[in-house]
Amino acid sequence: MTYWRSCPEINEPMSCPWCGKVTRKYYEEIRLPRDAPYEGNARVISRKPFGHVRDTDVVRVTRDLWRAFDYGHFDTLRCAQSWANAVLDEEDAA
Ligand SMILES: [Zn+2]
Image 1 (cartoon, rainbow, N blue to C red):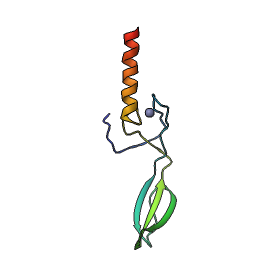
Image 2: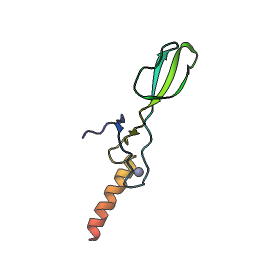
Image 3: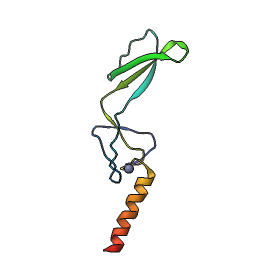
Image 4: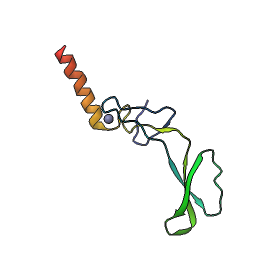
């Protein structure tokens, strides 16, 4: 498994083993011409004009999936570091 900073959608929520933070829902924003219907398979949350661009809308959609963490099993690098150090500290103590 390769961990990129771009977050893939995942089917089940996950929580950080260090701080317990839970993944957020995955939302996507798509720009569409004002009169074009959204024809994707995601659920539309909202549709708003795109700033001052008159002929473009921003459509916010979700497939009711979850957003993976940016750092594998962890939400932040700090959590990954703290967890790793705690594991090694425990090994030292044993
Ligand atoms: Zn965390």
